[in-house]
Length: 88
Image (cartoon, rainbow, N blue to C red):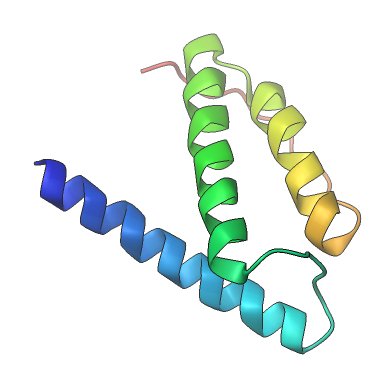
C-alpha cells in the first residue's frame, strides 16, 4: 500500500508542478522556487488542511489554510461557498 500511496502523491505533485510551471510561463502565477518544490509544499498544505477541516466538520478551516497559498501564487482567492463538510 505504501508504494501506491507514494505513486498517488508523486502523480499529484507532478501534475501540479506542470500546472504551476505553465502558469508561471504565461505570467499568470508568481513564485520563486522550482515548480515541483512549490507543488510539493502546496500538496502537503492542502492535505493537512483537508484533514483538519474534516475533523472539525468546518470548511472554513480548509479555506483559512488554503487562501494564503492561492494568494501567494496568483492573487486573491476565489470566493468561499458556504458548506459544511461531514467528518467521516
